[in-house]
Length: 138
Image (cartoon, rainbow, N blue to C red; front, top):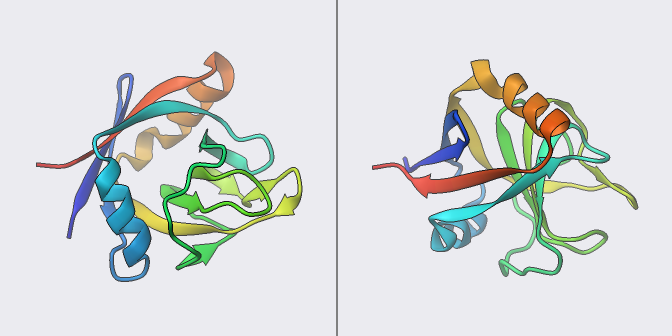
């Protein structure tokens, strides 16, 4: 099982890659690591933060996709109706865009740090964009 470290300011989380259920997404995501980006609060998806990626192409289709990620899940939307994006769920969420509901590939599941998720999401909500870094745990 491969573990991903997720860091944003003084927040740190650990998540496991869902390689059995989203193998292509996980494989492509690993090629990006270490991956640093800005995360902003979701506009339509409820209690979640996201990384908008425009027309970035990871060259994967839908696999293990859902519109209802659980607290601590990270989803990848490969594009189509809306722009490509990562969605990091910290509370109640229903994945959506300005076009309506969408589904994303559930490829990461948090295994450590749940107790700080709400504070992380609220920081992004009230303080704006935050740096976030994903790296393979050693």
